[in-house]
Length: 502
Image (cartoon, rainbow, N blue to C red):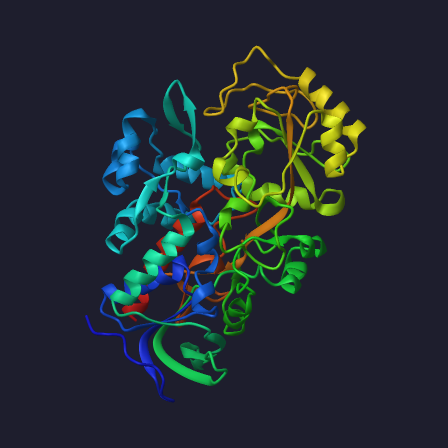
């Protein structure tokens, strides 16, 4: 394998340029280096703030597998030590296909989805060969039942140290293999010869403009969620009020450059991944220390109300892995663009420790619902009446079990389909949440096999590839939790292999 070359001269050239140093981009870099290509990664952010949206994730990957024993050879010693007390059922390729289809109401591109599922079957082992370390997600994806840790919702494995660990491990492996990573490198144009993309123009850390030529360019710079102007243009005016969960550098200009080069916009440009996010969090970008701990994802065992004290979602419609990415926008629709998760002393011990016991946290505790409502700015009478209706409507003949769909319903409007627990045991706990936008679903059209960028006529743009969040067509309105990192890895690997062979 030849070393990546320097790229500082006016006529500098490498085999493959990758734009973006998140999970998708670094997967593309690994794959291209496997094929012997020289690779330069251009990253818009500074080294200390790099990692794209990947850095802010929990590092969870949705992949098909045969169950607990199938995953044990890949995971860390701590996970293996807990395995005898673990219930972890298989998650099949058919289940992955069904989840993609049902959560997108069948709008997912079938060929892209098939490529994602097929490519995910060996992606953990491939990444392990590139230095990525794995663990079972006990803290995020299990409940304790009869002395055993029971996994739920098809999402079982993630990286050691979450997104932070994933970026550190990726970056170390890439640089060790000879990949050159240049930070504070802002791509401002694509070089073209006829229809082909032949390199990029970028400004370096000192603001000097540079031209870098290559046989292939892989775009892996994320969506447009960090641009308020683009959010308003594509998603609607209310999205100016969303809080940015992750990468402040994902402002969409790379998407614009690709569209200007003839790439076809593809997929769902009108919705995005958005969650219930700590209302006290900063709005201008993700929190580098707490990262994903600012999500509030234990709502299935409580209720979520607006400032009038009224429920507005079915908190127990499905396992949270299948609802959390769409419920952020429901919060955005509420008065003041805010909502409140409510729990009592029975449900509080069930909350995710990493999220609800983090610090700092926006949390209220009171001995009565009225006192809690007053402290948080909720109408006390409205919350009391809503809670009484909810408690009276619960089917208490069904046992409560958060590790399965227990059908313990509350027949109110909106209903609560599972995990309905009476809110009647003080103290009461409240967590104000706003809409936290993660990434946008609309992107570029690509060939499923090679990740080559396509035109409106489905013709290949020579020399141009894409991976990660700026690929459109797989997620519409919602997505199965953990499939974003998987998509970035699968199509990053395909893009890197194909780009190296161009």
